[in-house]
Amino acid sequence: MRWMGASLMALGLTACVGANGAGPGTPPPVAEGPCKNDGLDGFVGQKASAEVGTALLKASGAKTLRWGGPGMAMTMDFRPDRLTVSYDATMAITSARCG
View 1 (cartoon, rainbow, N blue to C red):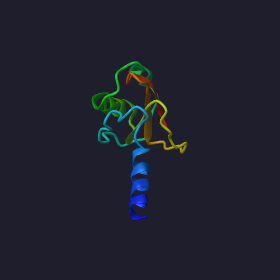
View 2: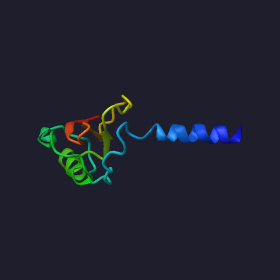
View 3: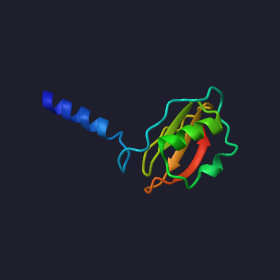
């Protein structure tokens, strides 16, 4: 019974990994204010990476960055200090928006 609980716990943790593997590393926060969407469309089409994530944080003024890969579930809660960046199976950024 003990091994079953450990197996279920491990399964729960692996379910949190993106559908197509790990996404780009989330860089540490570099900004202090609420997020702004202005100018983020210029990042669409770029390859998702930690370096691009740092640039996105700086451009938006967001405190935190959340990557969203294909098929990943995300909470719907709104956070004015968070930037959500979605990317496709080729790691190309498809959208960047505050919240």
